[in-house]
Image: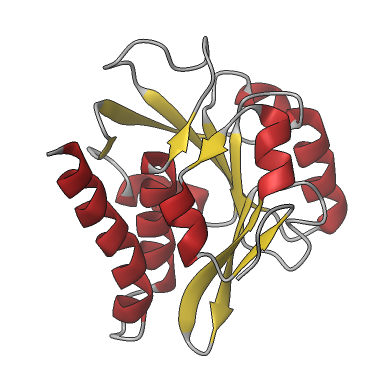
Length: 178
């Protein structure tokens, strides 16, 4: 039964890119990806021990509030999402996942450096996101949202990513590539 649920969620992750071409707003597609990324990540103890504890997703930068609204009342498995819009890196301490939409590379790099030692799934959408130490980067490829993964950064933080999700990545750095 769990395998069937996982297969369904994985299919929805793969289907997001196809739906992006059907005039769904880009932020809505990215929100769907973020939701699925949280469903395919596992946090080390004690980061997310309680089976029904909220999974805190923090949003930073342009469009953060709109993105958070699109994820309201959603859950990653048994964990309801608790959404926060933050503006300072110090506010990410209780976060399990952080979506960074920061246009300036220097700010992005500073945020990722500060979060590097924490069990936080970092998600972004800039050309330098993986090079700056981010874990999952969303990008527009031929009109569809795709993603790439920095497996080294994920392993360093203690967050593990499901191999099924990695198989869908456009590129995996620090692991087997496609």
